[in-house]
Length: 114
Image (cartoon, rainbow, N blue to C red; front, side, top):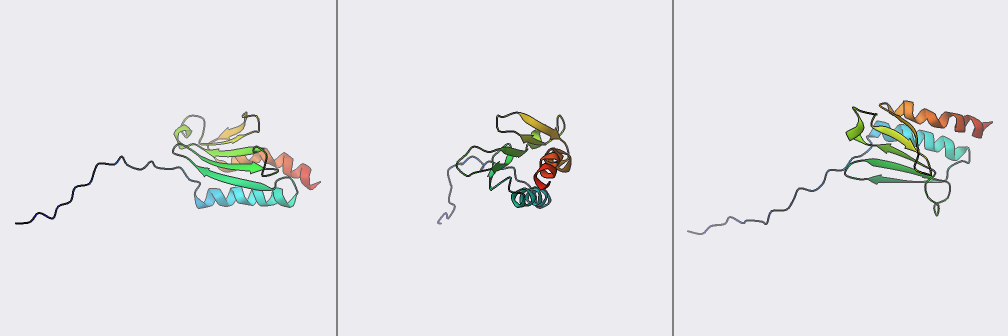
């Protein structure tokens, strides 16, 4: 009798990553497009990590990001899952709703259009 059972070494499960869902990404890219049209922003990068998702906004590609929009689900019940982080690492706005957090850019968009 021949045993065809193959055993594989135990590998740890691959880490789960946090992503922006389609609706969240649509709202972020809508804001990004308006700011590009106003001449304020020129480039972006998206990162997915095991504990958070980041949308980084740049004036020039070679610089550090002007802003980072962060989704951190672990903070959803405490301070809110979404935050906008400035260039120096300060948290400009934090909350449970993405639209509420993105309002931090409203003044900048109005100023850029005027």
